[in-house]
Image (cartoon, rainbow, N blue to C red):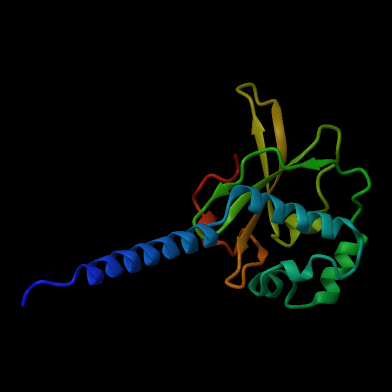
Length: 173
């Protein structure tokens, strides 16, 4: 009476294995990578640097749109259109940092290049950072752009003042 047919045990093992495999695939597909975070930051900067008046607005979280611009897309468009990117040389040449709920992407501004357009820091879309040597000579400078993947799977820019995962984590390298 207490014996089970071998088929039932085999089916249970197959079902358990299939569930474990599915969970592994889901967890791997949900977890973002530093390359994806860097690509999202690059896409946002390319969009706002393009000069198109509507470029980049849809890449801001709704909370960032509200906090930075009071939800006023026309104001954002005006600042994007007025920004001068002609002589700005930037690169993502540091590994983005995973902050659990978002990623800190370090945007270096190349030597001799002016800083990034003011609206990025002025509207708290990004945070400035510098790296200096022991003598105080600046070795690298730029901005930290916080990005996160939404529940829908698209990447969004989160203003640093709005990102609770960034506080106290030493982002001003």
